[in-house]
Image 1 (tube, rainbow, N blue to C red):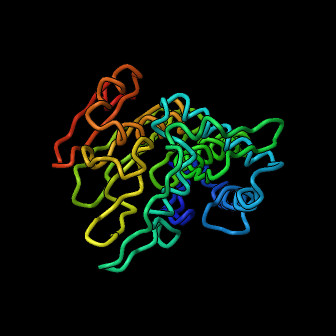
Image 2: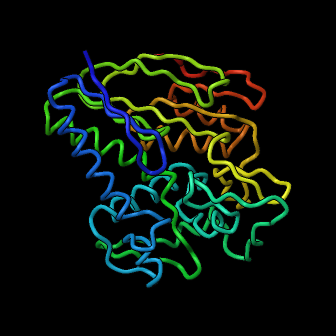
Length: 297
């Protein structure tokens, strides 16, 4: 019988589940230590993180963990045709997105700073390079790895814990969930408490990600904003979908698909069908669409 432990990381509710109850304690300690290293490497909200230091210096030598996370983010930008990019740091800051509960709340009647003229993130990511571990940043570009780093961390942690402790593992970091080992997992899928919900059986070794326009919201004057920006406008994606959940062989792919679906709006449907990943989409009015065989083991 699997056992689990809940904790918080990256301002998200997280869970570790293992098939062997005897390893839960040490596995949880290892997971927390790894997530601390991820935070120290790539947090945009920590001035002492490796990413923040490299941003201030305009680039430079990156450690293996950060270099790998940047490569993953650039690969996702390529695979999503620029829908999910790592170069939204300035745009998120301009709109008031900060570290407190995932965002910075703006007082009623105040306005976020105007977005300065710059190359749109849908294109600016193409100028970012990581060559032999050296991070090269175009002038005026600020990285935010939030769209992919958490999913990559879930993949890396699940695989590492499975190999280290020899048991099936499920790592859930907010909306990003990865598994390793032969055990199948029952996963309850729901965004907010009053939203539609479903439960699926996730095959061991597969992953799932949920992207939402309902969480990580804040106000700027009369506007209510959310954190998933359209890289072609630098503004929050249109609220076609409340949330999108996708199952895929790895969490990075699932997160890419769920996030890009939010950005694409109605255009997400043919794109997701072509990808072939099972997906569960909740419209802004609460209606549900299931495609590519969702739910499927």
